[in-house]
Length: 565
Image (tube, rainbow, N blue to C red; front, side):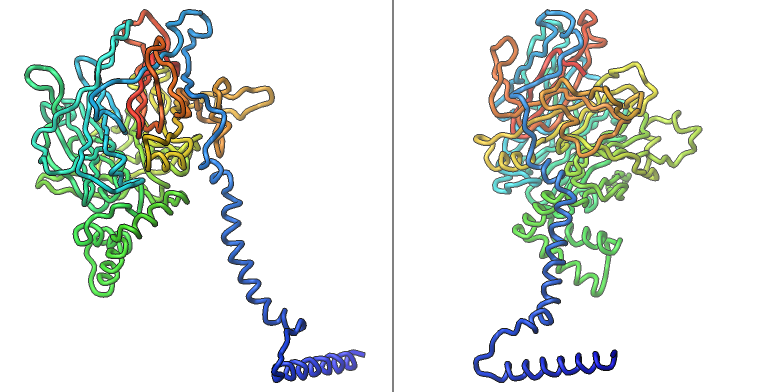
C-alpha cells in the first residue's frame, strides 16, 4: 500500500510538471492556480511579517498614542482651592487669578525661579517674544535676530496683594550682535556663587549653535531693578547639543539635559557635529581613518536642515528614548569638561535636585512622566550629610535610576515648592512638594508653535508628594484627585501607589476666564513652568494655601492667589 501511494504521488507530480511546461510554452499562457501557492507563499509571508512589525508596536502602545491626542473634560480654568474654601464662605478662600503685566516683549515665557536672598521676594523669568520665529526644539527656524530676555517680578507678600509689573533685566557685557534665546536657567545664592553676585546659568539657543551663558545677577548701586553681568559662554558637544534645562550645583559645576539626539538646528559640522558623532559612535572625540570619513559624511548629512527637521520630528512623535543628562565642570584654565551621567531618556527636559542632594528628578517628556535617580556619592556615607551640596554632588558622582513615574501630560519643567508644604522632613523630598507642569495635548502644542495667535494648547500643573501609606487602592477607596474636572488618574498610563498626584491648575487654554474680581481676563495656555509659595511664614494671619504662578510657552505669566496644594 505505501509503495502504491508513492507511485501515485510521483505520477501526479509528473503530470503537474508537464502541464506547467506546456502552459509556459504557449503564446497565451494563463495563471495556474496550482502553482500560485508555491510562488506566492514566501512573498505573502514577508508582507504579513512586515505588516505585523508595523502594527504590533502600535497596538501595544495604543494608550501612549491615544494620550498624545489630548484629554477631554477640562474646564476653561480650574484651580485647586484651599482647605478653608470648603469650610467657610469667605471669598478670600477661593482661588483668584490674574495675568502678570509687563513690557510688550514680556510673553512666551519658559522658566521661573525665586532669586535667592532677595530683599523683596522676587522671581526671575526667562521669556522669548520671538519664540514663534525661532524655536530650536519644535520650530520654526526663521528669524533668530530678535532677542528674548530675562525679567523679574516682585510678588506681594501683603494680604491685600498689591500687584507689581515684570521688569526687564539688563544684560551687561553680553555682545549686542549675539543672539539671546533663553530657555532653562538656574540660580545660585551669593554665598554659593563664588562672588558678590548670584551666579546665573542660562541655556541659550543661538543661530549657529547652543550654549550655556554664565552671568552674575546683581542689583545696581541704587538698589532698583536687576542686572545680569556676563561672565562667559560654555559650549561642549556633550552638553550643548540640544540643551534644555539646567541645574547649577556650584559656581563651577552644573547639570544640563539634552532633549534630542537629532537636533533640529545642528551645530557647525567641524567643531560640533563631527566631535559629537565621534563620541556617540566610537566613545572618543578624536578618530582616524575610515572612522573619521564615516563621521564626517554622517555629520554633513545630519547638518542638512531638512533632514535634521524630519529626524527630530520622528524622535519627538515616536517618543524615542534618545535624550541624556550631562555633568559639566568648569576648570581653572577656562575650559569645560563634560560627561554623560544618565541616558536613554525620552525627551529629557526639566530637572531638579533635592535639598539633600541625594535624588535627581528628570522630566521624561514623551514617556510621559518623571524619572527619579539616586545620587551615588563618591564620599563615604557616614560623611555624606555633613558636606555642603556642592561637595556632596561632585565630578565622580553617579546617577542610578530608581523610579519611573507616569504623569497625565507631556512634562515640561519641574520645581520644588519654595518652602516646605508638610512637616515631614524625612521623606525623599524633605517636605517640599514637587511641581510638574506641561502639555496635555502635544499635537495642539505643535500647532500652536506654528501660529500662536490663532491656535491654543491646554495647561496642567500638578504636585507630587510621597504617599505615606503606599498601599494599593482597595474597595471603596477614593482617588486623590477626584474633585478635579479631569482627575489625574483618568489620564495616567500606569499608577504608582507610592506617590500622591494632585492637580493644582487645569485649563483648556481656549477661552479667557474672568480673573480676580472680574477685572482681568486670564488665559493660561501652553503651560511650561510653575512656582508655588506657601503662605506659611508670610503675614497672612495663618491662612491656608499659597501663591501659584504658571508660565506659558506661548503665553505670559499667570498668578493665582489662595491655591491649595
